[in-house]
Image (cartoon, rainbow, N blue to C red; front, side, top):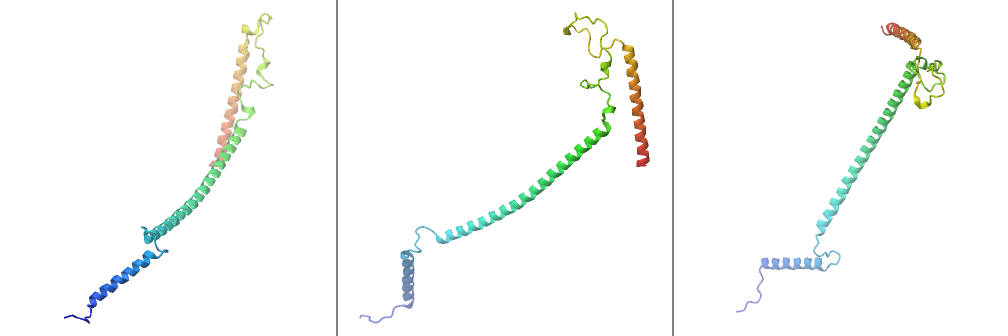
Length: 183
């Protein structure tokens, strides 16, 4: 009893057909040289390339933002430097004006030893013992030493009185100027 024309089960036929199709797809992938990559995941590589492109784009954006901030900071630094130079220039100008107004040569009271028109050289330093036996190392007399001390003191007191009167007049004049200009 042989069964001759038995029809196979349709589920078995479909499973066999699916296996054949999977095998053909596997062989096409395996034997296709263009897509054959042994041990490498192509999708993962493509996603890594996309991530790198995205990272480069964000870095480029950050660098552009940094460049704009750097330009702004440079401009601010230049403005501050100009402001500082202007402040320094104004201060120097005020100092020069002060010197011209308040520190005039006619108002100074100290002695300039390098001035050729020295008033203090009018008086001799040492009147006696002008013998030539005294050398420079004997220190018998000194510059500005006056044997006529009383005359010198009177002259100094007169100069002091004159300068004091002058200062008082200047102060009174400043007070009068402030009174009429300020109030």
